[in-house]
Structure formats: structure tokens, C-alpha cells
Image: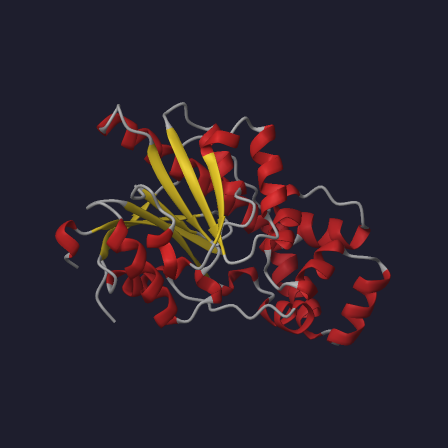
Length: 292
């Protein structure tokens, strides 16, 4: 693996994170997580079906898919099981932290792009975009000119994404495209200044990450930004998610993930942790002239 130089940074100012008290963290570590991880999975699945858990149903249909992300992000649940899983669960809470952190970082990058080139609209390319909640939030956090191309292999989330875009007044600034990311040349009219790969690396093999990162790096200008995340087992319930929800994630350290990105000519990594320690959001830059 290539040696990747990382700079650990404080989160941007103004991000409102959700955190747990020391007592609550201790109770999770000693009681809640071991119980969730070792109770027979068939019993948990039965309980979730009986209580009509929307989060469970979404994951059973599409593990880690956009519908489960929306439920975790919105945290507006009606079923008792979902109130517990989404409001009290470490993973959904960390997901909301990741969304807020990433949106702020993208907005700051848009602002920086506008300052460097006031006559141009910053272009964000979002891979595995789903309904585009993170980029939509980012665009509302900045007054700088920017637009986004949202790409997903499935168009299932696009109607919901267009509805959110319309509610935010972003219809003309968010374009949804169903496509394979390997066919980027076929549908991009202008090079992306920012590439968003959040929430997908944990479901990809090492070589798949390198292949996708290399493809987008070829389209980006020198020093263009790519934002992605690592995930750790700090959520404490990997066994629960695998056995009950069918989620099989690749847990990598920021160093390991940045090493893969470095193979695609990405460097200058700046790492930002959300307070629960589950996710690290990383911003890298394309090396000048494709150098590593």
C-alpha cells in the first residue's frame, strides 16, 4: 500500500453534532451492544417484523440502501422499534453526524472554489448519490454559485431526491443521472471540481475503490477535491448488523482508505472525525499533473 500523508483536522465551526454522555456510552459498551450482538438473530428479526420496523424492512430489501439512510437521517420515526434504533443507536446517530460534517465541508469547498474563480459555478459530482441529501444540504449552506450531478446505478431514489431539491429551491442546480460510474465520460458536460464518494467505500473492495477513484481523477482538474469516509467498528454492533440487517461492511482506517486513494493519484488528505468515532470524513486533492 502507498504511504499516504494525512493531516488530522478539527471539525469546521458551526456543525451541530449529536453526542452521548459518558454514562450512556458505558451502558452501551457493557450491556446494550453485547445483548444486541448475541441475542438470536431470528428472534430480533421476528420482533422487528411484528413491530413493523421501517428501518429493518428497508435494510432487508436493500442493505445499506438509500431508504435506510433517509430514515436514519430524518430520525422522524413512528414505530417504537425505529425510535429506539434510530434515535438511540450509535450507527444512525453517527450517520447524522457524518451528513452534517460532510455538508459543511462541501459548502466550504464551494466557497473556496468561488473565491478562486468568481465567474465559474463549482461543479460537484456525487457518486452513489441516492436522493442527494448531503449535497442538497451543502448547497443550502452556501451562497456561492454551484451545481451538482448526482449519479446512481439505480434511479429508485430520484423521485424523492427531486422532491427534496424542489423544496429547497435547487431544482435547476441538481441533475440526477442513472448510470454506471465507469461511464462518466458519456454524460459529464464539465469537469467536476468536487467529487463526493460518501457512504460507498464501505461496500466496495479495495480494487473497486481504486478503479472508481482513478476514473474520476482523470476528469478532475489538478487539485480538485474528493470527499469520502472511512468507517470503524466503534459503533459496537457489527455482528448485529450482519446477522439481523444483512449489512456486510468493510471497516477500514483512514490511513488504509487514503492509501487506496493515493494509488489513484489523490493526496493532501485532511481527516475530520465525527465525535462518536464511527466515521472519519476525508478530503483529498488530485495531485498536479496526475502525480502521486
